[in-house]
Length: 323
Ligand SMILES: Cc1cc2nc3c(=O)[nH]c(=O)nc-3n(C[C@H](O)[C@H](O)[C@H](O)COP(=O)(O)O)c2cc1C
Image 1 (tube, rainbow, N blue to C red):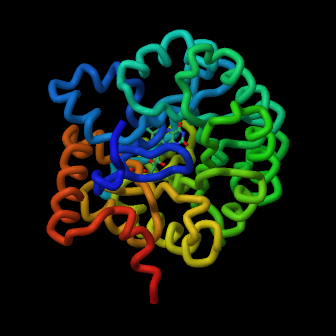
Image 2: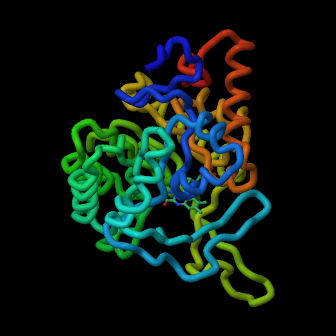
């Protein structure tokens, strides 16, 4: 295909070499069908290295009551509640459309018990007959039914068990990514647990828990009361968490377990911050709602920076961690 030494933007996630370090952040880009309606969709797809789907669950989910998304000064609050058409619907309706993107497809998965995570991975493995899926991203921020709705991601033992189960039921050549929740005191604990469980890659961060009050109705703004904060406000949180994992976990530092940095990226400088803090690739979500050219602009900006400094992205991974 391509000689990745010739592509300064190439990013390696285990056996998958991406042409660009930019990924869609789960839940924010729908399916490629929606991207396909944009007038510059070819350029957008060219700017991407892989497509991460919105969260898929075993059974269809209606999601949370409205209001589910609101804009705030520094980003977004959302409580979608994983609305989706279930694994069968995903395979039937969405996956064939995603194929037209000609990008590696990473399916973000959620479940409310460990057993359900296993069933979901096995279902996707057994029913993706054309082998269109390149890997899974496990969303450990979803609520655990057996722990009163507390997220799996806050308990390292549960994270390890979820990852082990998904790994066991995955296709051998799939990349298994564990997407960590920032709603913990020490991110390196669930990160190490995910590595223990056999994750290939870590991605971080998911949204930060928050709440907003409507002063006119004097009630919580979001139907679910609690929401997830995303966008520019959370970038320093994400950068710190990537840095902590990269500096404290030998498998991250040696790039045996690469990190995908996500959270508040809106321009190429933001993406570069994540790379320098230890990320191999980066995901963009909220900024894409605001700026349909964000992937193109970030890719171009990174390319120019690399050519100005005569270097490659791979050489810059973790450079802020040398001190
Ligand atoms: C509307 C919306 C839906 C999301 N859905 C999911 C999801 O289904 N699964 C998941 O792991 N993360 C989901 N996320 C989290 C994003 O993938 C991302 O981690 C987070 O928004 C931070 O990145 P950003 O600041 O670039 O948006 C969602 C975020 C938003 C705003």
